Length: 621
Image (cartoon, rainbow, N blue to C red; front, side, top):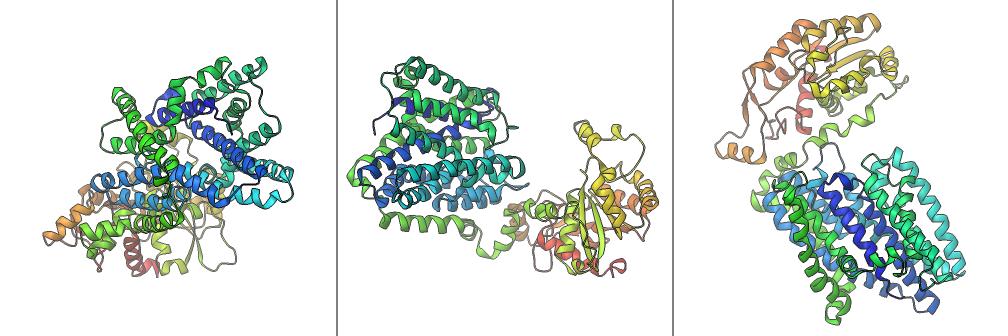
């Protein structure tokens, strides 16, 4: 296979697009398509090599996998190892746990799956994940594992059969990706089945060029199509944005643009000469290392507040990555690909133990870190801090506007509210209350208030939320109305703001007039706030293992107003059930586990604790 410098030039465009997108430059709002350009290029190059060896009768799976391993793994493992001390020293428990799981994904070629599963509401922000970008490498690695096996298996029936299978797989994957980009965007973004069509598009170009070898020099029509392809890629980079559904039909723009460059660029036309120029090709040669290093650098710099909005510091960081990427390419990538002494290190006998060790360390890295630094006796509490808010919302999506089962003898309950309502859902599901109530939920943001009133309350809502609250359907949502008609009970749970209790009496009257359900109002709660694993350890060291916190007077005032508005038979004082009637609250269970990770929301232990307390109350018996 002849070297094509314009392909390296295309890599340069791709990697710069991704870097400037991650840097936050608004002009590069669609820079994420650089990854899609890489996918097409990979499909073209890998398929070209496979076809070349298959037709020559010398294709060997073991050699293919070893070449891919030498190309990908040394620099990838180096970047991963360099990230570890920075994360251990600078990041908190939740971030360390997330990072460890991603290291496991990197080691087992499943980083895309791990990152997809981590994409929760309260998860670590993507821009703070040093190995976020490894999802795309995992997609390619999974493709590399499967595609050669398919080619070898089908080649016995001829190259035509392999080509037909590639075309069919392309259309199936494209249709799946187009559908999932709207209905299952998280899975569509990260997973191979919805991304494979981009790589397969490159594979189809390899079949075409094998059948119809490229003309040289470049024809006038070829030059025009190369310019057109470059324009399509750049159009996507500058005009796509976060609202663009990917990997759906819109990605046909950069994918087809990349195909036009691959098929028709020869280095003699205008666009071809630019792509094949020495500076652009030079950047393309180090593009893999540059891609690997940029995200860890951005994530760590952002974590430490060194960079924020795009400015001279971001530009300086990008420029400083160039020599790092060059060194990585010159002293890591090339030796492992070209020099026999390094090539021998990338063998199954070396890779397999390395993968096993890195996988174990990645998966259990959090436990090893906590045990070594703080002692294994604190592991249970450390786990609570490592996975805080994701527990709070974990069950909620499955219950949103869920239909009641008419055959179920349990009472039908509609639970309405914000994240404190999510606490109540967890409380029910963690206790024997689940055998008494079947729940359906509906979310109303805390700022908007779980209230039903004809009065204009816009002036009471903070300005940034007024538009959102005005658009929110509240109790008039059609799906909610139908459920409220069926419900035996209606529960309102919220982090009630100081202005909202005044509307609770009217809300109860409206609900009583419209529906036959019993009403329960769950009060607000607070256990101090500002907790961290370090403050927990400090309290332990000072003999305050129970994390005693003073209850704010505002919380008590709001709960008193809710009690007056709802009455004793309808009001559930959550704060008092957990803390008692004193002005101080113990933020831990009898087993020493935290009830709340942030002073407001309940942990799993906290939900179980509240569940036991509710079961003791007369109104729930």
